[in-house]
Every structure is written in C-alpha cells, then in structure tokens.
Image (cartoon, rainbow, N blue to C red; front, side):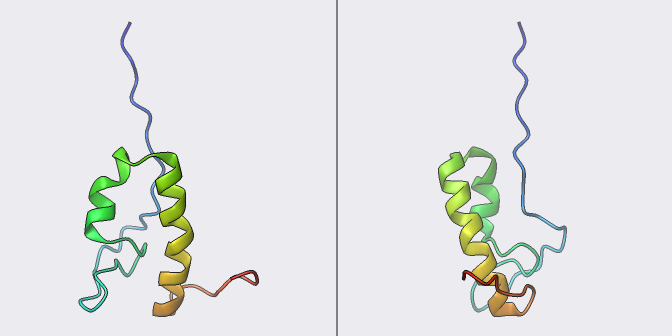
Length: 69
C-alpha cells in the first residue's frame, strides 16, 4: 500500500524577502534555515517557531501584538 505524505501547513504568505539585519523573512518571519527545515520539523518545534513568528513580525510592524503577548 502506498503511503501518502502529509502536507505540512506553512506560515508562508509568498512574500519571501529577507531583512539583512535579522535574516527573517518579511512575510512570514522565518529564517531561511527554518523555511528549509519546515517540512521535516517535529510538530513541537514548528509550534515553538510559530509562537516566535508573531513577535518577529510585530518588530517589523507587519502584525499587531496580541493582548497576551
């Protein structure tokens, strides 16, 4: 029986420009290394990165901080 690979949800929004100072994508907030590793990361590691992305994007003014942040 053929196994289907699960498609991993990605925070990518197809902007893909990187800040030279931080190395973070201006669209999703991930580093190039995080983007490349994303499909192979454990769910725990992905969720840790996702929590950090909001803080990164707030620094760029791309997103408003949530009340509990």
